[in-house]
Length: 146
Figure 1 (spheres, helix red, strand yellow):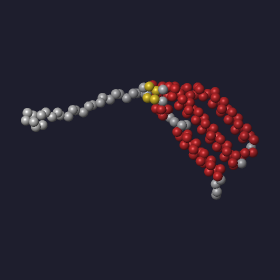
Figure 2 (cartoon, helix red, strand yellow; figure 1 turned 90 degrees about the vertical axis):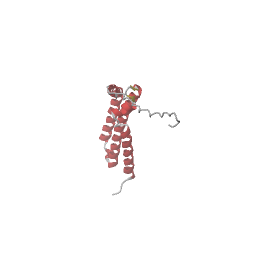
Figure 3 (spheres, one colour; figure 1 turned 90 degrees about the horizontal axis):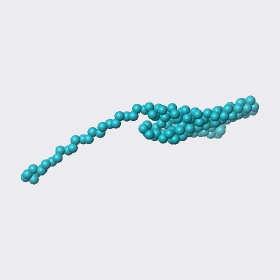
Figure 4 (cartoon, helix red, strand yellow; figure 1 turned 45 degrees about the vertical axis):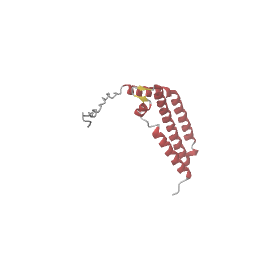
C-alpha cells in the first residue's frame, strides 16, 4: 500500500494544528489566571485578551478540523456531491454568524468567571522568616589569647 504525498502532507498539517491547539485551545482557566498576573493584583485587560484569544483559537481549530475533513472527503471522491458543498457552505455561514454575534458575550462571561475565581482564591498566609542565631562572639582575654 503506497501513501500519496497529499495524505502525508495532511498528516503534517494535522500534527501542526494539534500541537498549536495544545498550547492555546486547551488552555485551562487556571493557566489563563496565572498568565494574567498575581492573585492579589491581576491585569483585567490581559485576562480579557487571553480569554478572547482562547475563544478565537477554539473557533479557528474547529474550522481547521472541518476543512481537513472536507479535504479528506474530496480526496475520497465526494467532491461531485453538490448537496455536500451547499451544506458545508451553509454550516460555515451559520458558524461565522454565531461567532460574530456571540464573541463579546462569551469572552466577557469567561473572563468574569476567571476573575471571580482569582478574587476568591485563598492567599497563602505570610510566613515568618526565622533568622538563625548569631554566632558566638569571641572575647579576647587579658593575656591576648582568643
